[in-house]
Image (cartoon, rainbow, N blue to C red):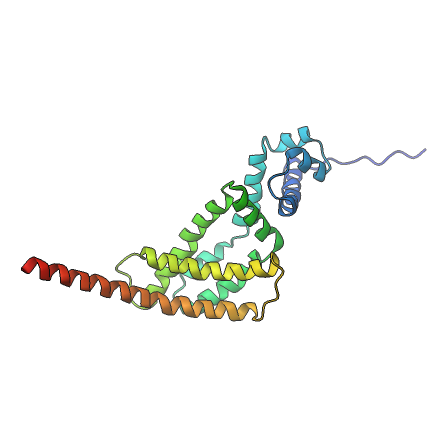
Amino acid sequence: MPNKPVRQRLPYDERREQFVEKAVQFFAKEGFESSTRDLARSLGVTQPLLYRYFPSKEDLIREVYEAVYLQRWRDEWNDLLIDRSKSIKDRLNLFYTQYTDVIFRDDWMRIFLFSGLKGIGLNREYLLFIRQNLIEVITKEILAEHHIENTPPSDDEIEFGWTIHGGIFYYGVRLLIYNMAVHSDKSFVIENSIQAWTHQLIAIREHNSNSRTKSGAVHDSGAAR
């Protein structure tokens, strides 16, 4: 009688990575309300075995966050955004074309939105990352292209950056979450969003500068009386 094939056990790190990949699929479909028992069942393992790799559900969620959000952020984007040998419009067009290829995916979108609804903080952490590594950087680079480098971005300028970035993100939400028909392709949305960002940011800077000048003039006039 032939011997049964020996089932090889995967190395610890490889199996852990496999669990994370399957957990990404699970959380993207079910959200974060399900128990670790449900998760273990979907993975085809026992709950005690799952705990050998991840002591708590929060530890596994942290690994999912790393895999879906931080590991998919490309290091070369950091260099691209500050490469002043290219115009800021060219840099942003290339960045957002590549970035949306990464985030316009079911698992990315659904986990991000489920996280916000559950209030577990993954999206807040990621948005802080985006502010520091994207919104603030782009704002400074737009200003620098107009030879404005002596003052940091204002709150209004950062908020406007969120408006543009959020609009591009919401295009993906309409496609993947709401399953809506869109009447313009992604390149049109990106190109016009960049146009608005680079143009309107300077208008905001000039408006705020003029407002401060007028305020200072009124103050000086009052002091002279």
